[in-house]
Amino acid sequence: MTALVECVPNFSEGRDKAKVEAVVAAAKAVPGVTILDVETDADHNRCVLSFVATPQAAVEACFAVAKKSCELIDLNVHKGEHPRMGAVDVIPFIPVSGVSVEDCVKLAESLARRIGGELQIPAYLYDLAARVPERKDLANVRKGQFEGLRDLIGKDPSRAPDFGPNHIHPTAGAVAVGARRQIVNFNLNLDIADMAAGKDIAKRLRASGGGLPCVRAKEILLEKRGQVQISTVLTDYKTTSMRRVLAEAMVLSGGHGAKVVATEIVGLLPREALLDFALETLTLENFNPAVQILENRLEALGIGAHGAESGSGPEWLQASETLSRALASTAPVPGGGSAAAAAGAMGCALGAMAVGISLKSKKLEPAKRPLLERGLEGMEMARRELQGLASEDAESFAGFGKAMALPKDDPARAARIQEALAAAAEVPLRTAAAAQRAHAAAKALAPAVSSAVASDLNCALHLLKAAALCAAENVRINTAGLKDRDKARALDARVDAVLSAI
Picture (cartoon, rainbow, N blue to C red):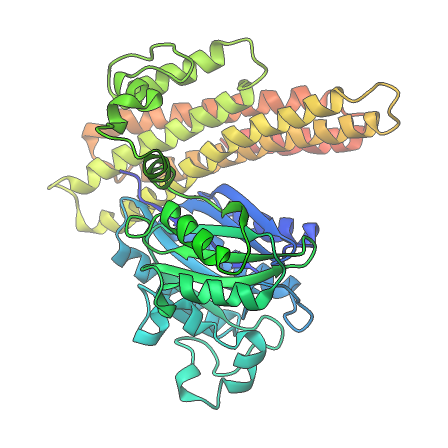
């Protein structure tokens, strides 16, 4: 099972698109990171970024987000409805697969120590990573926000950080880093602008005010809409569901002559949470989701979403069938660039298998273990990077398609096409470079792997070389259409250099 962690860093910028994109790009640039969602809110002036990664890549990406946020965001001029104490305000680690909550606590500690030491931003451990009981609740950590903490830190011993300086960073404030389980961010918008009423509703809704268990709630004014929002966090959606929160909020709102007119979910949530809402709302009896939900039934039978049977074999064989069918279709994507990246990802996976088996060998020489352990982590990071590039290649082709679809009399059409061609060349170039790096890393592992899996490692090398060669073909087909010949020659020279190294 691949070790995967979800990270949901919240940073204090939801209005400046360029800054948001720069922070997200910092995370995306880390090999092994897959971006899941980017949620911005102008009223909150906040962005919620969600991604998954291997444990080490997760720490690197979160540090990159913290560093870029520190460079771009000044809390002294930041205004928004959401409570905040830092440029990057909160960073939770959440176990997804092959990782325990205890592992996430260690990741949180590692990141907090690094942010405190290298960026000189005071870092507080919260939730399951908290070293102080009061800091399990994020609201306690963030109490007073940036301005309040600025006045108290260094004076009030209870506000001393777990890592970093005992004084506020002049522009980036402080950060809360923690570990937690999956939560649901569920907001309810009312048809009133009365903040006193909103404050009463939120207080009576949240657990700390005697309301629903495992619920946090805060009233927020959405100025542009002229509405009060009750922003809630369900820390255990199995104990208190979205349906129950909505029902209670409707009753409390009614007491103030108000109604819940809309709800929203911020970021990602488990499918089970939505299913629970539907089951509670419909008050179904004797309902079996595994059997009666069409998609669940099809997945269990090994039948794809479009009704084509993908086989009754193991999951990996069904996945292979899905990929081969997609490549065989006449749809514009996936194409050669995505296939190249997928081949590279398979090469890395095969290399990881060879290394993993070698590490389990009773004949393994102790001196070889450190090299193999580093190699295993490197193969997994490279696999995630190449898997992400398969998706990026499809996205870049979609961008080219949009440019081509512009009206021929649009004066911006020619420039947009050239920009799209350049972007479509850059992605397979990155794929070729990633495959070349992985090829070199796998080749260096050859003397250390067990002879029983030497052929598997050789197969990994062949796949990685093929990935680089196929990606290069996709670079050249796009550079051929570039009118800027100097740029085209530069891109071709870069891909030639990659191939010469392999």
